[in-house]
Image 1 (cartoon, rainbow, N blue to C red):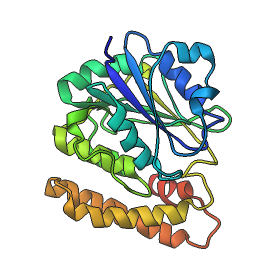
Image 2: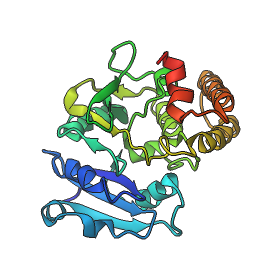
Image 3: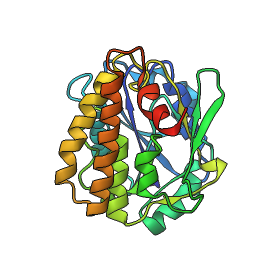
Image 4: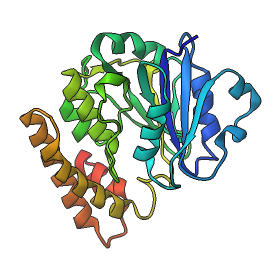
Length: 272
């Protein structure tokens, strides 16, 4: 039976977390799921999964042409293998709440794209913040996509993403969401705990690594160049340009200081 949704999962140095991520897929009830898993290193991730997890999944396995091609390249390879008409994103170090896909799929069918709350969990297992629209409405404004500096993981009709995942060093999830917002005209939001995306803080992730500020700067420069060529409404273009100019300035200010990306950029803008 054909899958309702293909979940795109890039994996690089994810041996310690991928079982948790894939278990959260296997726990999705009432939805037929295909996992499109793309390794961006030399690890056989399928072999790491327990048999009881593998048994209940339809899987498309693939690799990037060269290791460490980056998450955008891995997602685009996985997207080329995915079979379902609806695409969802899940990083190999994160997880879904058990009812996420069942909650979002009917909304995606109406609007073309949807997401739910992003619940950030620290290394002690404690929720540190939850991202949702500031107006508490049923739509995610483009201002919140850009200004909250928290990831929103989309579920979308694949025709809404004709360009695929943007090839960027950093913050490619923001640009993907802006693309989806612009293509759909509105971005639906389901504010329910069962729709949570669970975003685990990981010192080894790109935002937590020692070179995160350097990578962020390169990514922000790419985004500022990309803004001019994107088919976005002019107010959206102006917003994205402003936000990433602010973030670039914050990164430049933190250069050489003992600061990580979170302290330099996100926490500086929300007063933490």
